[in-house]
Amino acid sequence: MDLETLRTQCLSCTRCPLHTTRTNVVFGQGVPTAEVLFVGEGPGQSEDEQGLPFVGRSGQLLDKYLFAIDLDRNQNCYIANIVKCRPPHNRVPEAFEQNACLPYLRAQFVLVRPKILVCLGATAAKAVIRPDLRITRERGIWVDKKGTQILPTYHPSALLRDETGEKKREAWQDMKALRDRMKEMGIYPGQEVEADG
Ligand code: URA
Image 1 (tube, rainbow, N blue to C red):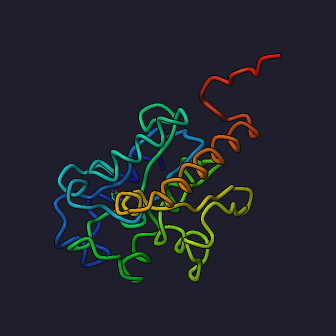
Image 2 (cartoon, rainbow, N blue to C red; image 1 turned 90 degrees about the vertical axis):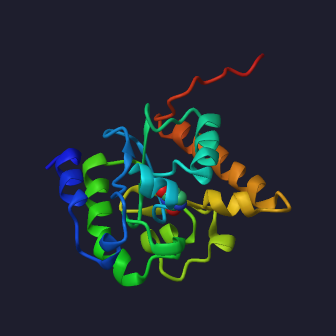
């Protein structure tokens, strides 16, 4: 099995009712050998229309954060979601919808074999790390699961709603921690800048 075969299977999925209201399945996008996998919640309207993850406003913000730490979905990372079909009115996907869809994410994880997984928002963090995780308390705290380093952080749409700037500051701290962890692991794709003296 490779990612393209899995994508083909996923495109005709009818495992949950979300298939009846979708325009496109949003399987995922990125480099099949990526060291870092970003996981969001589920497609929004733009993603449903285009069949690609994080292409709306929150995706544009995500791309900016990635760019700042030398990550790029076309060069060195992979982006997926907990559910591959848009929940109507962008509601949080129900547990049974998440459970129906999670085998696709698990298979993507097995095929991509990332060393780091970044959970974008509470839905992804609860599904991947622990159902009772609290994102405001536990963002930025790394979790090791069977050798994979997992970082929960805010969803970019929460950053778009952030009026005080506090969440944006915390998210940027998380991105710097991600960059440092990639450096420690020898998988940082950007230039290491030597300190003077
Ligand atoms: N929000 C998500 O969680 N995923 C997307 O792909 C887009 C917006």
